[in-house]
Length: 384
Image 1 (cartoon, helix red, strand yellow):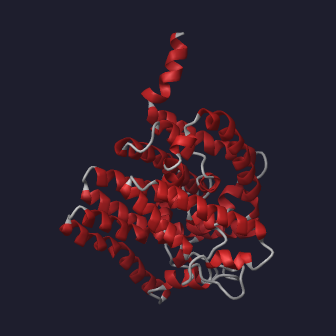
Image 2 (cartoon, rainbow, N blue to C red; image 1 turned 45 degrees about the vertical axis):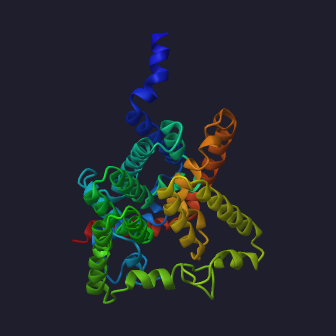
């Protein structure tokens, strides 16, 4: 009886160990089946190869780079540097093995993300059970489940978002500034953190701090100056996202459109009813979740800004662009439903089956060829 009681109380007594284990298990549930087939799929899934190559070259791209037949060297400017830097640092522990370092970078930042999310839920008192909501975060939504098992910037981005909110709650402004600066250098939408937190400080009439918030963009300025040096184009990252982001359309290749919901109309005018219905559901669900955060002012405003930004995103991968608001507009906003016993014991197991079916089915479909991957690894080993 004592052992059973200790087992049941373990999550509450050791939440950080427990949540680290859950995140690890959620990842291994993808890795183990792939290990019996072709584990290289994890490293070959886009955009992982690009991050590894940047980690080695840091944007000094040779003319014969592995993707030179399809992409100009300036394409790499669209991938921001913090995640590749983390990969490069972790090669010290993987003896120069870049695929292993990338997997380690994703896994470590994913564990960091769930631990920081738990800390955020506790400090802001957002949900009934921070542990249960954090467990859900290890699996939900399914697009996030996939992103935290491959080479992607989202886990690190979440670490910085959660770190900024925790530091803001603790009134540790320097840490807020650092998290925002690094978020801007992790994913392009990170720049939205600047007006969001600037508004927070203005709302509390902290004029001096609010005035200093725009200086967190200095990291981006330095990055663009570096792009000017290596690519001869100060706006190389911007041009990549506005000229090469949506290759499925012959008339629209930018990831940003000046008219809201353009991607929805694009699919609605074609026999793409699956995408049209999915996007409709995502927009409505995200808006309902955002509005449900009204009493949690900071998280309402944060989610609203990112949601409005996605209205102008022109990309088939809308679920990925909505990920920054998912922890709040989905998990926190619908906490009363997600905490219900019926959800825990009926809906959640069904979701796990559907989510892992999606991840294991989709992972092999968006990968670079084994030949290109071998060429890239050869270049990584031979480049100075």
